[in-house]
Image (cartoon, rainbow, N blue to C red; front, side, top):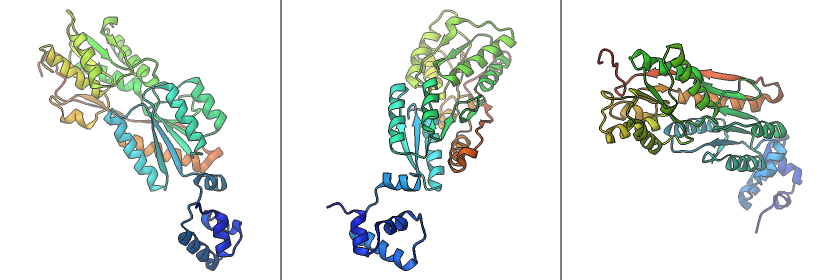
Length: 339
């Protein structure tokens, strides 16, 4: 038999509103009455309805976190960090894996709305007009992660994707490379587009031609994609001397592809990744990469969302940019002096 709040009130000899006030701590109740009510709650095994409580207190202590996938260690670390930070403030994380599918993404957003979540952290591969309409219509606090909303319509946290890719490309150019391929990232994705534009601009600023057949894009950030496309790149008659990959996972696949094509890294081909996941330093050769401060991204994302929830209408939205860093390891070589 389901125990109701009426059962608790009857046995404790108090009103239903008193039981509600004790459970939700919404109004003052004398210590003696509170103790009696809580004893009855424990005795009967009464479990308050979470949705009802959230309606009364106007908070659910639930945060939805939407991610495009869990395969990339960068995303896994980000989720672990943000979950830990939110838990410190008594919030429970509801993790939703969208598998890079916009329809699944909106299915979860509607579900989270029905669960009365207090806020949403959104990592999306393609932020669209209908995302804007959804959050404006439903007034759910949202934090865009690994995405920059320059309009500041929504709060966001990211690195400067454009500048990061520019700096990575410039580093390869400084190592003497003039034939550089770009590997990965659907240009429907804002951060992938920004990185690609930074890549192209670095080439242009240094008088280096951009060849269309050196460009490969995909929504997949996987080792398998890097392997397949890497073999396609390295089998070309006029192959590049360096490859800039949009993720370390793709870079690992590209290194495997080079080996299958009989090429040595970095002696025959230099490969640079993006993210600086733990595998990047452990892999052999160590992967040169763009370091994203994933721990700071996760902590800042949680804190920014919690501040938005707390301050409500007075909260001033911001597009926070964290610093990136170019990490050089053994997968890249200076082809001018042989180092």
